Image (tube, rainbow, N blue to C red; front, side, top):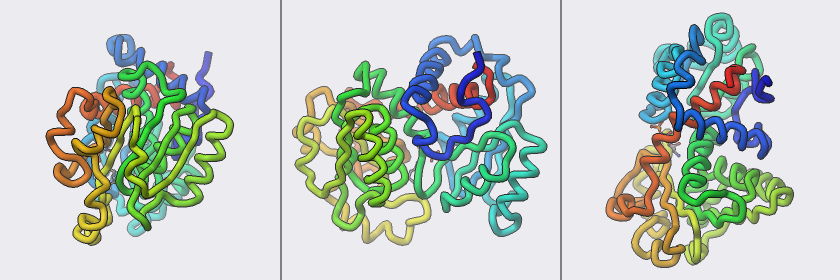
Length: 310
Ligand code: CP
Ligand code: NVA
């Protein structure tokens, strides 16, 4: 049976229903357990990867994923395309659609992945924009299930900046029925429209989604998540943010308040000593490297669904 996701774009985690996310996660579990069943699945398929920003995990997981499934990935560095300056997104999307089977783009403005998707005739995957990081959240959900056996009804807390990762986590958690509290310093909350959307989605799944500045809100959390205080493109603000965000971190004190078995997550790269200290990141509760590895499995599953090869 053809996947309901065949030919679709993946710009936001909200592009998929809860059932569709379950489908991808189920495939990700299978791919992780039996990678040798998929060595020919992407035969003669090509993934074009557009990068406006640096990457370790996203680039290597997509490139390795395609290679392991018999396909090929082309890395297009920021200076190769100069998306939006050397060439308009419409033309990039139309040209790549004539040559590649799927496009992945890591961009600054979210409008760029939207424009690529508007004009591409092949699936477009958001590999991180300033607004969302949906591929990361697929791997995060897979990791939480591995550690906790479920998502529904868990209490997750994100501490730090109300950024792209926080946005995708909120709506992803809402879809899957996982309660989520995003804790940020005043003025750094997630965008109000994202919080509202997540709360609306949560009404259907039973997930309570909250944005607060109160650090005590980590009390009894099952999942603790953090990300850098200054994202790519915000380097100029890094010094000021270091001061403002000082208390908004995962450390021994946060662990005290959370559940004893709380899972620690970080999408990486980490700035140790800032949003998380090195010792805490290495506790047995930490799943940060499983999370990184799951980028590979979750994205192989995503590619299989979008290209109708499940
Ligand atoms: N987590 C993540 O997307 O890592 P990279 O920026 O290294 O791809
Ligand atoms: N919020 C971070 C995530 C990096 C994977 C950034 O956008 O730089």
